[in-house]
Image 1: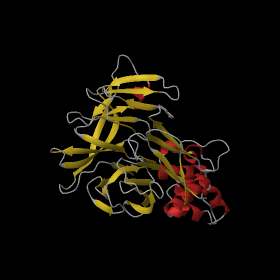
Image 2 (image 1 turned 60 degrees about the vertical axis):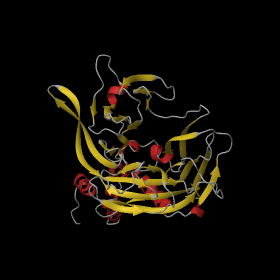
Image 3 (image 1 turned 90 degrees about the horizontal axis):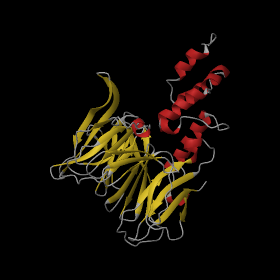
Length: 396
């Protein structure tokens, strides 16, 4: 301590510390405190915790990365410990038609604002469309359209399959686009997104086929820019399996090609009811429903957790890098949050909320929910013609 290390070597040492340890070294002396306040250290912790795609820049006049990291963690802890009475309940009024949630954005995640502002993007049967960033759209002819927004100007059109495109997912890094149909003879494809954004008339967009037909769901790992997990059916849909690939761009024989490397695969037991929904967290976790239960597996097939929070079958599942939301025909939704302790991340069961307060009418249609660290939104469908937008906001 009498001969302090130069700043650059000390920064390198501090870069291996987690947030708690970094806060501790701030208390050693003034010099260590100055080095440990370095924005680069706290930015890296944000990238590691919440994924690189939302935190690539900091707006002028925004708080430091340290302040932002601590405020986000505070919001997470508040959401994780929230009870139903901690939420303010609202319903959207008016005839909205059939609503389909598309994206759920947190203002602080994108702009590092001190105040959390949640923005919901939806499309409705009233022909109202709200969109942001570049978006890929698939159609029933097997084509993939890349459009700009808000102008919706066409950038490219690629014929991916002979049948319809039923699944379309962009990776968190925006580098890859996964496309598939549910037809049993279709092999899913992953496109290099740059080729869709800057198409060439004389070149076919770079892509690779994944050798698993009958793909019914897929999800990108939030913190790995190139890892995707597929859910597929086998033997007349009596067996369900999961397989995971890492995508790379490689130079072979003077040409650039997309390669898919299978890193894990497993089949569920025959006696387990085939899931409909799935999600991926970290690089090695798969969460899915089976009947009224929620399961957490590793990508190699190791069962880690099982939850029985619903009385009737889970009808929808939503997953991001922080939260898992389930909705059920029992008129309830349940919130879980990812916790990172020990060898594997695990799910913490948080709170149980009604789709609509004091409405006990049985639901015959699928209800869908999304959330961030400030609120939960649920689209409740009680009839074929209309749906209700329900919002739960934490009372701050």
